[in-house]
Length: 303
Image 1 (cartoon, rainbow, N blue to C red):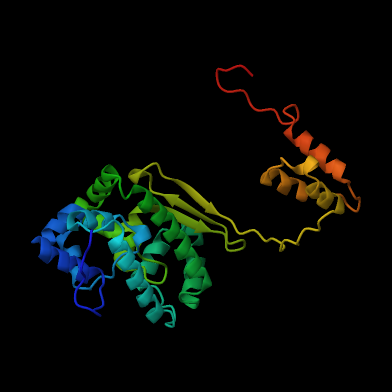
Image 2 (cartoon, helix red, strand yellow):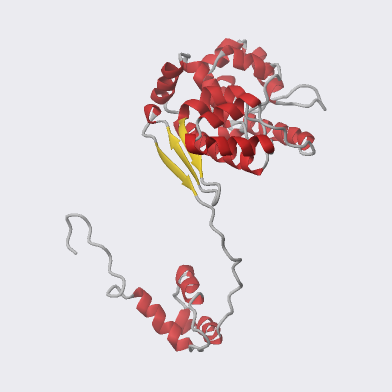
């Protein structure tokens, strides 16, 4: 399909292309809203550039719009990515802004009561400091993972709409905008409409910074997400044993070894002893021996 986008040298963005195709196809904003299952207001703000185009990887709206506008698959996504990269370059030098006060309160009210006062004190002492950013990011990650998984689940979206007294289209718009936000741009509306109803509670151990986030079981299967921070020493490069190098050079010994088997043999440690190439060959055969690593019998089958 061959398309012509405006005059030569004109900057083409998502809203311009959509408006051009609406005119060519004699369609209105309502047609787009119905096809994308969003509100007409959302389409209006997108076309007026009052809303930035959502990130292609976080939404399903472009494929729906491309179908009704008869655009090549991926065309709107491509333009949106270019447009967002240009906007990102403008914002990259700006310092991070503190969370809206209402956002902080909504997040804190979900915190375990035994930890809330201490967490609040740290948040207020260091507005949008390391702890507040970490906590907000983890809660956002959990809620966005749920939203991303359920975006195409009409029954789940209608359940959320009923829970909050909104229409299905309003909930879809809220989810699309929520999936497109990040810890530096999360708004009070994002928190009220999406994050708050999906998160039942959260807690943090201020000594280890381990976190626990509990999902709202009324809106799905629920569950608990835990995050732990483990101190690790940097991995040291592995010394290659001379016998292992000989084993690799000898096609008769290692010719049919898989990458996984070679990596296993490479990581063997010997505390100063020096194994031969033959040792690695025998270790390879031992690794493949079903008597050493028996497979569990299948259900109802013969072992």
